[in-house]
Amino acid sequence: MVPVKAVPLVLIGIALAASAPAAAQPKAPAIAQTCSACHGLKGVSTTKDSPSLAGQPDVFTQYQLVFMRDGQRQPGVMAGIVKTLTDQNIRDLGAYYAALPPPPPFAKAEPVDADKANAVMGPRRCGNCHKEDFSGQGETGRLAGQRPDYLIKSLKDFRSGVRRGRGMGAMMEVSVTLEDADIVLIAHYLAAKP
Ligand code: HEC
Ligand code: HEC
Image (cartoon, rainbow, N blue to C red; front, side, top):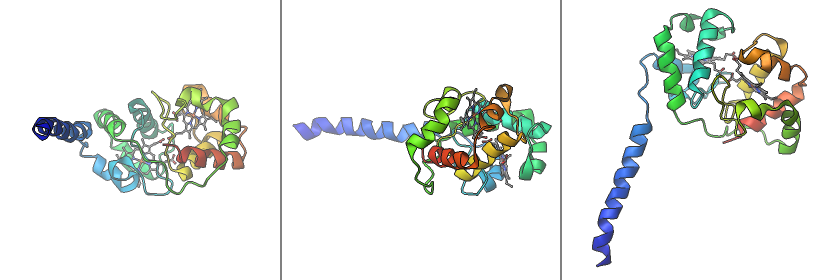
């Protein structure tokens, strides 16, 4: 009879569905609890100007923490905590955030004209380094789903040279010719990306 045969298949389906998310949930290093006050539980920020960290490439997060600890990047409100991080903490944190599911598209992003955004970004080849889907790779950060307020601040920091970044100053070079309106446009376009 049909129902008898179907039962084991359904059970297997449930077993797989239950085990997949468990395997994908990385164990949070103890110190990550302090970080979650600003960067959100599971690395998705609900705080203005505080970036989401979930889904960032492991190497990217590690570099940024080292830059802030060593003073190559202004640590701002992280000045106190970042000084206390050991190399092992930084390795654990890089792996932890990289394994978390990336942030969903930012709900309050302002709708923008995709053609206009692409006209600004295309010639600057943003997708070459950040990947065409803006998920980031290696030392190059994920931009898709990031908070627009933070994207605006970071692009302005690169443009003014407050932040120099990796990649032989690539970000200073691409941002120096951006107008304020371009930056706002790009930020909302990227924030709304899945
Ligand atoms: C008091 C709030 C606060 C706390 C606590 C905090 N951060 Fe941050 N963090 C920020 C802000 C704000 C920025 C953005 C700095 C800037 O604008 O350049 C930031 C930036 C970062 C960045 C750079 C991300 C990027 O996309 O460039 C990383 C990585 C980071 N924090 C990791 C951590 C970790 C790990 C901890 C815990 C050990 C932590 N933060 C604790 C507020 C905080
Ligand atoms: C040649 C490679 C390259 C190109 C082209 C490039 N980027 Fe980047 N971008 C990087 C690297 C590397 C970083 C990390 C810099 C650092 O170490 O702080 C970065 C960082 C960023 C950040 C900060 C992310 C964060 O979470 O802190 C933003 C925002 C950004 N890029 C946007 C753009 C946009 C928009 C464009 C196109 C207009 C662009 N990038 C083109 C390599 C590139």
